[in-house]
Length: 235
Ligand code: 1GP
Image 1 (tube, protein in one colour):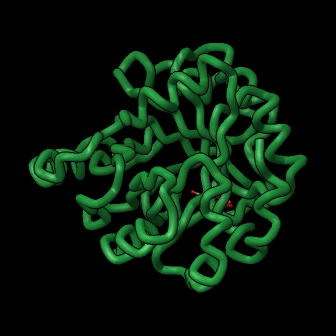
Image 2 (cartoon, rainbow, N blue to C red; image 1 turned 180 degrees about the horizontal axis):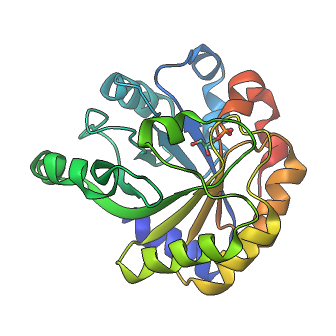
């Protein structure tokens, strides 16, 4: 099934989704020990700021779950033909043109030849209260969490540029998740589905993001330490 259509349909029907982020460079044994947990979130994102062992990771998780596996690459080495789709993301507040379009051009033929669904996504870094690997790797200056106009402008620009998703990212392990007022303002100005992640480590924080208008909440770190809590976070 077309993953983007499924996400758009869920957003239209106001069905909230949980995505678990799997970083191939981190220990994955907790998932191997309890693979049944992987059937609980609606989506699995695979990638990280620096990781390279994507192919093996996708193949392993393919044997553990039937859930869609979406590539969430930090660099063009993080591609795999065995994924269900690729989030072809541009870091909109990067100062490095490579992160906006340069890497995409260099990887374009390889991406086309993967023959998997490719979903253009605007990725917006919001200050989460501590330096993030995503901001470092992307050479981006995260927007202050109070800069609602800036975030709305970036998200609307993403939509006008033809992106199909917008991701508000506070950074993995953020001290503060993206605030609800910022999510709400962005949600009210765009029509495309909205992902929110970074620093979400309680069911209440996940609920607050969904209630503010996130269609998909993305959680990585917390489930690396406490995968057994996954059932508590379901939308
Ligand atoms: C990072 O938004 C994701 O790209 C998830 O962040 O690891 O803090 O949950 P956490």
